[in-house]
Length: 413
Image 1 (cartoon, rainbow, N blue to C red):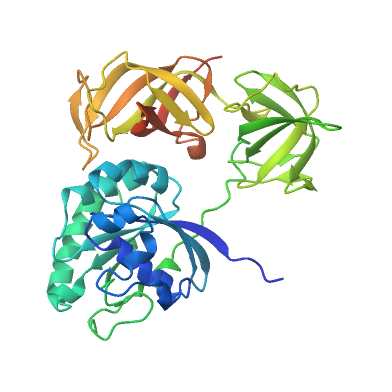
Image 2 (cartoon, rainbow, N blue to C red):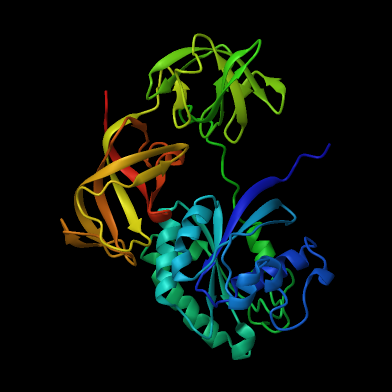
């Protein structure tokens, strides 16, 4: 059997009307992932594919993240089609944080918009390190090289402010609507010598499996299975779990030897990052552990934070966030209410520079460093040490109000 292609999650980000859905539709079409007949007639034919919701059809806006798949010669991609309207930034958080790489779409007729900055900053905050810049709608400016170069310059200056290196990034002149430079070199841009979008996607590097980091398995569910005993189930985020090793669950602090590991009803000797496994640990009972606990090796147990410092972006909050505010933090599989103890610094979200020390409040659109205290024991890791365990979303009133990452922490023990 041929080795499966490596898989990558790809986000499309950018301003709302800059043609992301059309581009995605075209990619799927040109890579054979969808047939022509699935497309409706008329101007917005490609968008049709991504926007399966009638409400969206009427508004002409993409809301949901469409998990479409397509293959390039090298990779298998899942597309996270990220909406660009302001109120959909939260979808981008939940979507983009699953992405390994992104295509930032900027329309040549509009240029850089306030949202373009915000999205580049968010992509960086969410740990997306690989980027392609798609300069779209080139057909509207008659494929003018000067206009392309002027915008390339402007976008380069912008992404430098969030520590991307323009020299390492492909800037591609595209027409998502006409299909220029998506999978085939376009005759309309003879001046462009770089790769097509599909070729540029193949220049990305697949994420390394973080096998060398400490073992972390956030628990999703705990089952009792006759003849086996208690079986916690979770996805290995980092490290490797082997049969016969001793693991500890935090925050409860119970530990024991891994007697068996199974995945898709097959017994394994070890589990690696990305594996969804059920495992049985000697001496650990069903009432000892629950969803949100994290398993790690006894020699390097998961960190329980008494309080932690975070960098957050406030996405949508009807009021203001002040000291004492206690919303629910969703971090890996845990959901724990945490109280804001300190608002340390307010940042300019377009540059990351400090704008104000010790602000009185934070509102929608602000980025900040804050100190928070979980109301009950919770596992979280520093983003610099185990990035997979350091990101979180903050929810309140049935919506995602903010997202962020743990910069530093005070361990509980």
